[in-house]
Image (cartoon, rainbow, N blue to C red; front, side, top):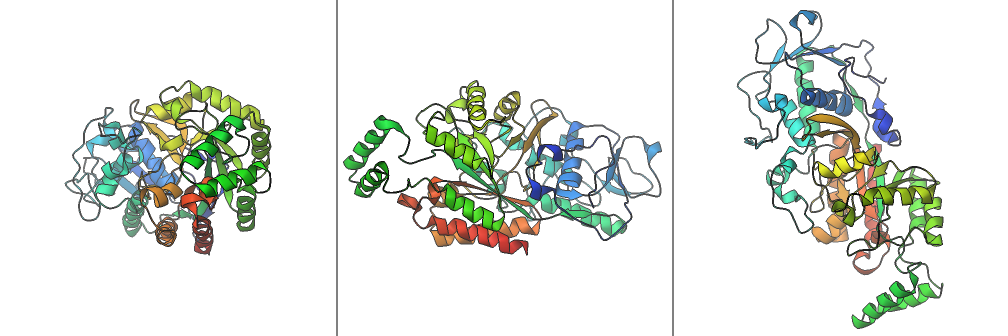
Length: 467
């Protein structure tokens, strides 16, 4: 049973995420009667509308109506009084001021042992869970001054979630479930449908091939570097690939295809199409081998843009990179993930919106696995700088290969355990597991030896978790 909020103030982003089939599956409720939750707030607020949609449309599926006039309250229906006024009926939750502000400022955050903050004086809960969800989902803390890492990124270690040890929890989901439990204890006839656990594998292609199709200058330049480093195994591979006696080590696409088709996995590739630079190393899309590859991938997977590292300081590059990729695959690109996960709130997302990107998959940390926004469900981007909702949909990811191997320095066996913990958490909240891998990390070369087994374990474990 697909349920939607009955309020005209609510948001619906499902049309923008139609390729995320798993996120749209809803576990039917055994109840037949649809009881609508009334939420009273004397003030109208774009922030409140956003977070109500997040809780009751994106995380859960619970029909609700936002009411501003006391005279419109139906005395026979469940009521949540989200105000400072005492009413003669309904459950009370005291709103935190952040929900009705329009500016951005440092908030007083005091975390208790249960990861709650924004304490209130009374009500059904001693905290404003809507305000907490808003703070996490909008990445409010990333609009405030912070010490950037070497790539000018907000580090996970500076996040509220990491500092207070709940980065490994889909914490906003737990807050929403806790609120609903309290509501249902008071109103047993409230009907809640739950979304089902889903999985989406996303793969960034920073360089389509290790040696193939790079041209003579780059090929022999790489050969010289390998000689100088005495990396004879790389020299050997280059020679064998150059003589077409061995497959390029980054050409793992048939392996991915067979594995994903067997397990019926939704797949999304993100293609780096920017100009060659210090951090942008992909092969030009004009190369015939790359064109053939992308058109082959497009027959069974989604293709999105991987905006270059350089585009962060020169955002005008996004348009040309998007156009080049669209021309190559013969359809318009509407999804993206930032190279090096470079997000600067709100400029990065504003630039994507200007270039008609509808869905972005960048939201996750490089330094640690987990839930950057406390969420594992697609949701709309709320621009705090303009205090309004935008047409961009955010799809958070939870696990990246480079985080496990290069940042956390985990062994393959250790990485498998961490992966299992994250999958278990996503399953617990009926969320969407989104993983970020690279074709390079499946090459079984250099520091990626034995990491194919890690990825295969991820696939097998999430599949078992569905059952």
